[in-house]
Image (tube, rainbow, N blue to C red; front, side):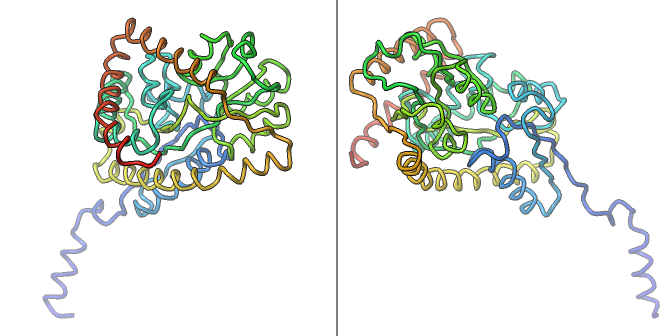
Length: 347
């Protein structure tokens, strides 16, 4: 070995030990609001998102999915992340509406926009900055990670022909749409997905809405209730987010944050495609094999829903400045967007 080779070898050996070690992995424990076996939003959190993050980070980031209840009860997942006892949560902003009803606006909005318009408001119209400002007050950072197309409107044991048929029903309902149903005489409660079927089967509730036909099919609601109503006026598009403890998010290397954001963006694209592609099959199977009666709400009932919704908006805006601020942003964007929506799209 010549003198130059010896000097080069000596220089390599003299490097600090830390420089010769592989980058440490970032391990994130994620509590989920939805079971991993659930079509689309469960599978996305359990399998697709962790795989995308691991691949994009070269194995440096490990997102560990935990079933609802494994770390904390589903309804407490976001509180646990806020407190720092859990690194991340898979949920929707509406699950945090007990803190402030305005959080519902970042999850889904009754009589709201479709996917394209909702994305436009969130990313270009001020929705995302407003949501992050609100979540930061609770030491949370939200990363939009999935969006799905219109949900079904609900499962009922009997056909709903008039508004009177709704009165007195006990129904599982999510978000601000529950307020609408209550105005029409329905008693509502929000149940996590794992509790809905039993509640419907045992008569704790008379009816339920949950999600898309492909998801509802797997939960077996058709075994108890045969009347399946559309359109999902209460959820025309729905966001699901990945939530981080804000202090931990801010402390991450920027490239780690970028990997997570990019993985969520890619997952959103897949969810839109899968969500749109898989509903017809589930609807046809339930109709043909399980005797499900697919119904569309009458114009009279749809008008009553919309009237009640406008009342809810007025009430919330009057009593909650935070809701009014978010609503004003959203409503102004929709007003401005209307010329493009009305002229640019086929009707």
